[in-house]
Length: 116
Image 1 (cartoon, rainbow, N blue to C red):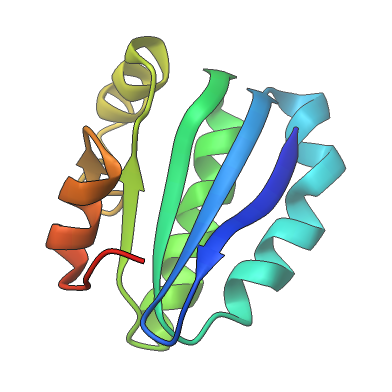
Image 2 (tube, helix red, strand yellow):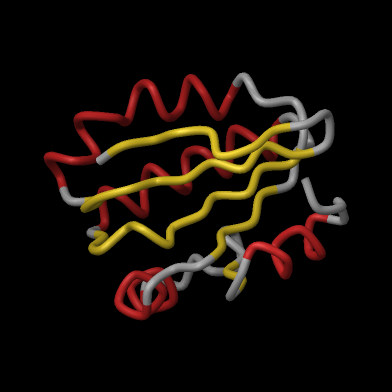
């Protein structure tokens, strides 16, 4: 599991997650991920295009990030989830808290921000 900032400006930070969001992967990045997300001041786009697998621990980490941002009044959108990852999020019935979009432009539109 790896987290990197793909792009940022004053209104949006675009994060790219890469790898398997299994127990080992989540345990490896959880603290850094939450600390990084919580320090964000603008809207957040979480790009899951390179996440190949997700378990409940990974969904929990994403929910923790969404809650932390919501407490600050910051919007979050999830983009580019592979079909199995998207299905797992929908089956967990958390896609209302983790709004899923099919691409980055749709996510920016949902967040009300322009292209970086």
